[in-house]
Length: 253
Image 1 (cartoon, rainbow, N blue to C red):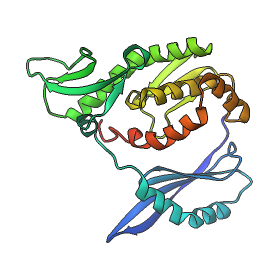
Image 2 (cartoon, helix red, strand yellow; image 1 turned 45 degrees about the horizontal axis):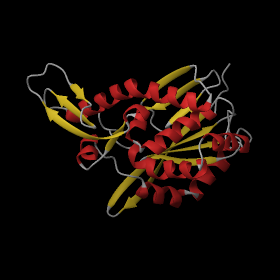
Image 3 (cartoon, rainbow, N blue to C red; image 1 turned 90 degrees about the vertical axis):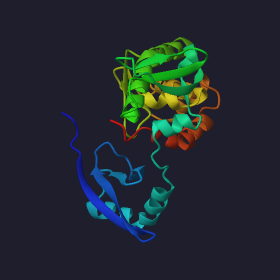
Image 4 (tube, helix red, strand yellow; image 1 turned 120 degrees about the horizontal axis):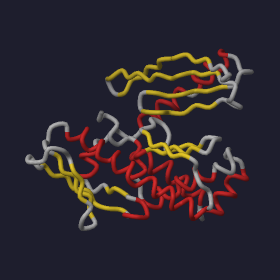
């Protein structure tokens, strides 16, 4: 049986200029939690988890005490940016070790029955039959590239590390770049293709390291440092630089 997790929703309101904004926080009691933890998931949503031995009253008190922090972080959260805007302003797609980082161009081919991708001239060119719903088409094209190139990227990292995932899942996770399950399944967000190559490599090495250490203990970081030099600094870079990338294409399909 799975441990029982109880959660409640709490709506917080605050003024931003003359506008009244709402932030919905999920307050969750979980037997897996060892300490109370609060994090912002998006500009309008947060998650507070706390252990069974803590009371709901104490959890809500913690939430009230950190209201100003949530308000500040909500204002600092990167605004959602469309993939169209991202690529038109110089955003790249990284196709892993096989293809490297490439510029992206978008074209319309009214004679085409379906969308198509060209990988010629060190560039990713995405052709669509119509300019209608371009953002949704861009996201779908990126996801198809993820299914095409991420397996090879993971395989390359597996050969480098000697750690082989039993299964790969590629998803559109809302709050996570990746995860590794005890049965050897590595899950990766398709947006890894939008990261710089160095951070994409790090993310995959990070998840593979969990095959031998299913936690973030000192032993895990020692193991990861043996796989990729400067792991701690790369992790900080992913947390900082990855926020904007993680918001890309969120409004499309």
